[in-house]
Amino acid sequence: MKPPSSFTPELKTESTQVSYRFRCPGPGGFQCTSTGLVFVMAQEAELLYRIVQWDETLLKSAGKTAAGPLFDIQCPEDAVRQLHLPHCETKDALLSEGLLSVVHITDDGMSVLEPLEITDTHVIVKVPHLSAFGLAWVSEVLWRLWNNVHPISGQVLLFLRPPNPKTQRQNLNVLLLPSNVPLEEVSRKQPMSVYIPAPSQCKLIEDRNYTAHCPTAQKVQPEKAEFDLHFGPNYHPTFEIRLPANTEQATVTVRDQTDADVWKHEFDLTGKVFIHLQHQST
Image 1: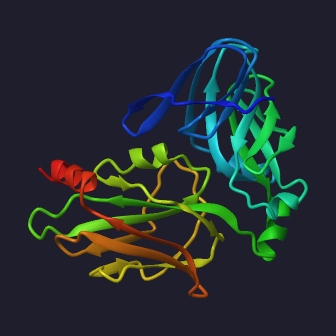
Image 2: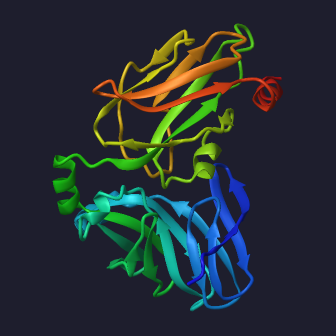
């Protein structure tokens, strides 16, 4: 199959719930720039999809653990042939046979679909009929991997809140998340903050302690935090960094419990970021 064509979906937000819409012009592969999902279409059709909350009890009863967001997808019957779900695995983890599967949830219950193929970035599955689809780890295989240390592909996201009107002090929120959590979903949960674009990729290990460092900060809290795998619906900051008034430039470093750097970025608060913050604080 030819590489999929990229598309930017139409977004609709109600409260903090994001819905995505796109009309596929005909047969072929189409990749969403917001979620990473790839739809292999048999015909022209409109896609409607959104991320919904996992039922952890249902997953545990099947010996599964969520490995990505759960997507509720609506489309005319037989229009979608395949679905490619973005995963957060490293190449080494992909060598573990049986680790990943696709969970399909309908009104009739939950079923588990074996992947047609697992690439470096996606899990490919044939679509029986549309409803809710999500990636899951097999708990037994995952347990063995965690004992041998199982890093995932993660991301570090930065959100700057408007200055305090009295002190002009700024708060920078640092979020540690799996790489297959869409940025759009996280941004909508930070309505009073400005996203600071930065190379976000890193490797993270669940239940390991991490620390955030910023030489210009007045305070960083908490002093350390465990990385937990979260796939929504809420995305809370892992660290809060308090910056002095009129800070124009800062460097943030995230380190693991061995004090090794796992991520580092220098950013400035001038230009568009400053204009956005001034607008929000007035």
